Structure formats: C-alpha cells, structure tokens
Image (cartoon, rainbow, N blue to C red):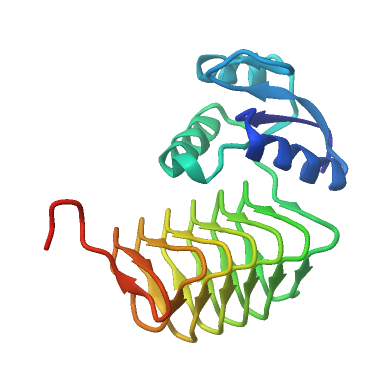
Length: 209
C-alpha cells in the first residue's frame, strides 16, 4: 500500500522518515508538530481529525531519539485515531524472508535483518544497523546508525542502542535501557540502566556512589 502519509514530528528525524517514505513510494501529506513550520498541518490534537477527514491515508511517528517516551505516546495516539501505520523498509535494506516486522517500524538503507529476527511495532532501525539471526527487538526500541546485534540478542521495549555499539551473542538489553555510542556489551543490561565503554559498564545514577 502507498498513498499520502502523515508524519508526526517535523524535526530532523521526521524529515529523514519523509525521505524514507518517498523511497518506498509514499507521498507526504504533511507533518504534525508542537511548533508551526513548513508543511506542518497541526499538532497532536489535530491528528484524529486529519485521519478522519482523509487528509492522509496513513500515518507514522517521526520523532527521534531525543524523546523516546514521545514515540510511544504518539504511536498510541495513532492507534486510538484508527490510523493505518505502515512498515517502511528502504529498498537498499536487506531483510531475510523469515524476519517479522511490526507496524509503524522504519528500516533505513543499509540495515541488515537476518534469519528469524523479530521486530516489534514503532521501532527505528537506522542506516547500517545489523541484527543477525534470532534477534528480538521489542516495540518502540531505537537502533542508531551502525549498531550491531550479534545472534540471539534481545532488545526490550523502548531501549536505545547508540551509534556503532556492538552487542555480543545472546546479550539482552532491558526495557528503557540505554547503550552508549561505541559501547561493546558483553553482559546483560538491566532495565533502565545506562552503559558506556568497551567493555560496557553501567554508570552510576545521579547522586549515586
């Protein structure tokens, strides 16, 4: 399916999603955003009306890594509005036939998804990210450019994996956790934790020892 796509978020990531959508055969109906600007048709409160009145045939979240909670919030807004939320896979991505991808997920050029990989809803897989066989990436997770998930890695919901990070086979990253750019993850990352470095180590929370 292709038609007119509404993008929720008019910042840098939203514009990147627009380019991806065009490569997938969509035309851009416009954007919604909290700040007026070129192509912005309204804000959050206008999404349901834009869908109901046929201003767009489908919609997708275009908010990036600076506000992951907003990605979940906006996706839930789209589901409440009854919007179609397409999967966008760039023609230059490599996706195994046994891979499953959830709705509203965006897959940028150069991404590699191996055999039996499972990707949830509203996931961002940025350019040249790799998830090899049997990885599981849960809904609302975000993989930055060049992130590498070796076989059987699990990334839980709303987790963030930074640019160039490497996760060794069988590693799991907990819900809402953050893996810093360039980290080499050799052990489980607990929910909500932030890890940095090579090998990756958890940083102490603010005010901690």
